Amino acid sequence: MNYTSKHLENKVDISPDMPTAERILLRLKTRGPASTATLAQELGMTAEAARLQVQKLLADELISGVQEAAAGAGRPRQNWALSAAGHARFPDTHAYLTIQLIGSIRQLFGDEGLDRLISQREGEMRKDYLKACSGLASVPKKLDKLAALRAAEGYMARVEKDGKDWLLIEDHCPICAAATSCQGFCRSELQLFREVIGEAASVTREEHLLAGARRCVYRVTGK
Image 1 (cartoon, rainbow, N blue to C red):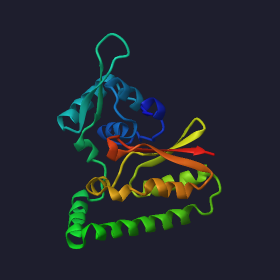
Image 2 (tube, one colour; image 1 turned 60 degrees about the vertical axis):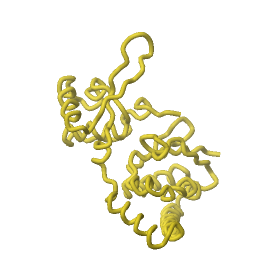
Image 3 (cartoon, helix red, strand yellow; image 1 turned 45 degrees about the vertical axis):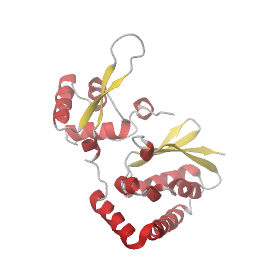
């Protein structure tokens, strides 16, 4: 299921004190593509102010245009989305250095050595997450704690209610460069989330950044 901005409206706090350009970039990062009119409405701007900001961001190559198919006859609507440079404005935990280190580990210790490193990281995360959530009985409380832990690690994580289910949404991946270079870095996250939540609910991944989505989304369904 594709979650567009109508599912996420007003779910992310975009402070009016932020510079206007940063507010637009954060809006596109957390809620996906939007038209100039939508940006103006959601961010409390005039249409002209929004248009000028969009033109500046286009000139800086931080956003790019995407066409939204028209529901009926007529021209498709022009929306705006973050470009690769726009995504790069959000922290990625020293991506270049990380990729270099991965290459060096492979060269010195082979794939087996890299796998041992990843397994150690997985074990430490599992220990920390389970400890932090051990005293929490309900699924919502565990999800809130898990989202807080992931947000502190740079994943821009949050929880939303979706009918009877919950969505654990991660709008950013601070290790995206590392995970792209070696997909083992996120191989165990789904299983880890299932362990943290426990048998009271099932966890499935609905969107995955490395599969071409703009973020990662996990659906949590009570049993």
